[in-house]
Length: 629
Image 1 (cartoon, rainbow, N blue to C red):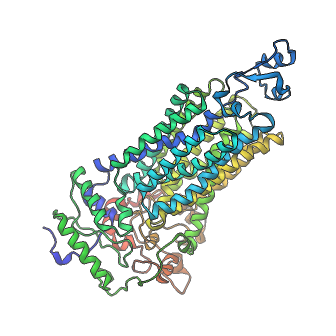
Image 2: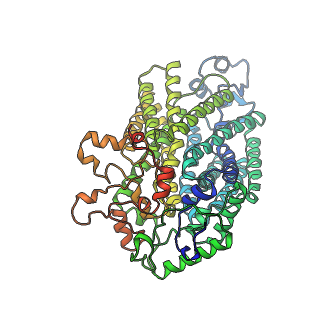
Image 3: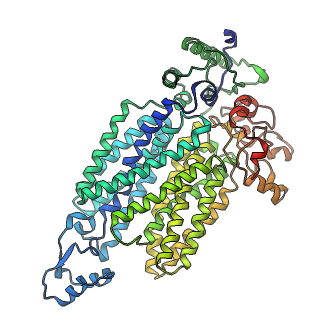
């Protein structure tokens, strides 16, 4: 039977509502997932345009000697091997371009002494991506996922038109910076919007699935580039693809999780009502917890369905009770959050030493991932033959990597999968640095990209689950900025190796930094089995070897925490319990007591374990024997 109306002040989290009422992965979530992921297709095209707009025009002989009697020129032209060095020694007036429209290098004469400008354009794009990650990370949190997604797509499309019309290499470079800004916001918002409405059981696999659309975008780019071989025509074709996806605005709803966090409850309820209708499920009876509330949600109880009006009335009653300092359940008498205090920001959250450490390790891991992923492509010429075939083979290699990551992420955990990918990539790069040029080196490089691609796929999921909704987009934005720093560094590392005459140096750097990053990721807490945190107090449910004090108890105890595959549904112990004053109060709890929104729970007990035990046990928990590695 439904509960009496006087119980309307009890609240549940959105994850509880998805698990017990709305459905974790119904028709509505699948629709949102597919529609939002479609925007990864133009995103891949905008990012990887450089591969086909800056094709090498010298080796495929898109030039000819002006005088067939010029022996020196004809000798270079007829050489079957690499001719770049000999070509640069020819007088400029001894040859001319025959198909200058196929590449910016031939159009703008970016060869020999000016070849570095082409690399600068590549780095410039990642500079724009770095800027865009921060800008759109904040916009996505303040203005909404949907507006940021389509605004970024429009910006990238417009700037690609500017790219196509570039009269010289410097306008081209600036346009690529601006395109990078839009592409960053596009990727960030598309991922968040696609996954925030999905229940905790399927969120990880769905996040990995979005990356398959990026690979699909690579295949679309190959097809379009094969049809439109002129670089300006290719840019215009890419713009059309991006513009078409803007029509998805009318079919994609805003994230209900974001609407709730921003206090737009009525809009969130309408989105959830549509979700329930399309999924063939029912709306929750209990009102959804206000993420800015001082009180935690009680354990969810499954009741008979009630109408939407009752739900709204219950939510209003709960909000009024919280505003007046009313308490209920096991937390009776707890004080609400202090009014007038500033909201949680990324900077205030980083005052927590545990959050700061996790944030820093992930920033380094993101930087190394991007640097290694793109650096491998830049350090090797790739497979012999057609650039279209080479590109397709490289793109196809990412499919099994993503599929394997999707399988592993729900079985061996987020941080284990990410760390394993980075270690595999690092070891392959180190082996590649000692391997002579040839097929063996190409195979090792491919294995390295395989590992990096899988780790890159997990990085977004793992990072988003590590931080609360209030700062999630900002964190992802900054971590993406760190990744783009790696993208900017990659071409210069490769160029440094070229100038020093050491082809092994870039691989040594990529390998060593990847190994260090992989080992550091193992020290981070596992998030599989933990409800997606909405507030800072929810972070107490995410425990590492440092917050539990396991690192002080020897290698065996620490390794049990480092290689944990799933978090059990049990109260977690805080390292502060061993440190005298303040025992049972984590850094994040102390920070919240100083003015940030907080949930109050029993000492040493995570808010989710105390307030959402029913959902945690029923959905997220694994039997203790499954937690062992």
